[in-house]
Amino acid sequence: MHRVRFVTLAIALAALVGASPAAARGPALRVSPARLAAAFHCHGDVAGSTRQPIMLVTGTGASGEQAYSIGKGAFDAVGNPVCDVDFPDNTTADIQVSVQYLVYG
Image (cartoon, rainbow, N blue to C red; front, top):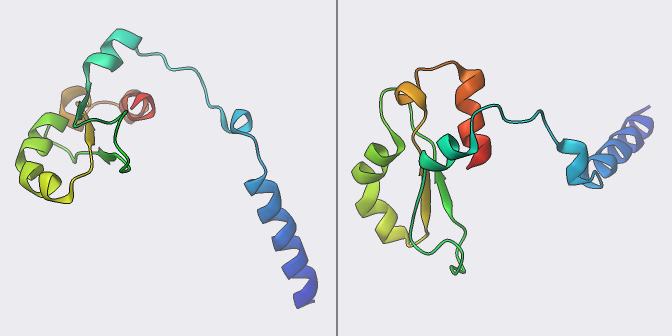
């Protein structure tokens, strides 16, 4: 019985790993691209860096830029480029709208 479960799990994991990115495509974004772009900020050389960029996602009540400025010293010490998003209404808007800003980022 354990072998059957293991084989089933292995097949399921293989299917997930082999899934194409197109299979993971979600619904179209409804917020305008200009509005999404205006809310997205990167600090440091994201395109030319050999280090993985950090995506800073704020909590409720602050913009991405405010959160970045608070943690700037720590981010500078780590050395990775940092990107942040200013979510609508300081992350208090409808989550179905706000998540589009994160997906864009």
